[in-house]
Length: 112
Length: 114
Image 1 (cartoon, rainbow over the protein chains, first blue to last red):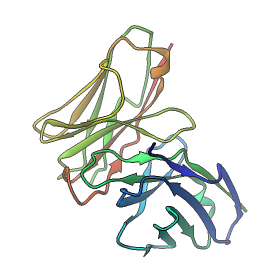
Image 2 (cartoon, helix red, strand yellow):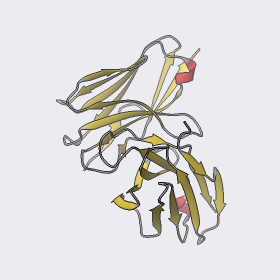
Image 3 (cartoon, rainbow over the protein chains, first blue to last red):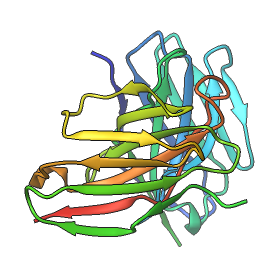
Image 4 (cartoon, rainbow over the protein chains, first blue to last red):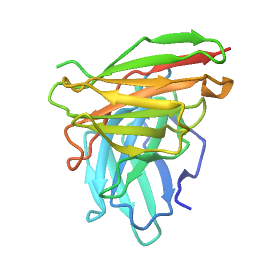
């Protein structure tokens, strides 16, 4: 069935290092992907999105890479800061569908 | 501009009771979606509404219902509450039912069923 999963449940990095959070998806019909950040007690916060006709998109300190061949998505965070500590979700959407399908999340812990 | 707002923040109910959760979308957004997030998991889609009509429904029982008002705010109702309904209920808004697809979430309502 359809699924959006994450490779690692917890990622621990040193402040100032770069972080890479990975996500695998199984539905080749997915054509839109979003990364969300969720801090404790808050709703998911939109970080960056990418359409399936792209393989890379950059934002402020974040880059999303999409590899459709292996159905893999990654979020790269440059110069990770303590404020980046949170749970990160990838989500996918098929055009015409109404719902985002979320993975279970990766917890990013930034060590000072 | 204010983001998505939800009320109440927290709620404690007893099994068998009914609950109504409320959501106000971002100004200019006409589509509202509801998601259930159980602790330790990603959000699960419940409903999407656009222009007061239901446009999508997830795999939830008929105890769950929702509606959207002319001002685009929305309510989620859950009847005959079960312990398993304890979760964070999230509302998300977007401009329309189609592209652009960015969805923005509110802070959620934490429902505890005892």
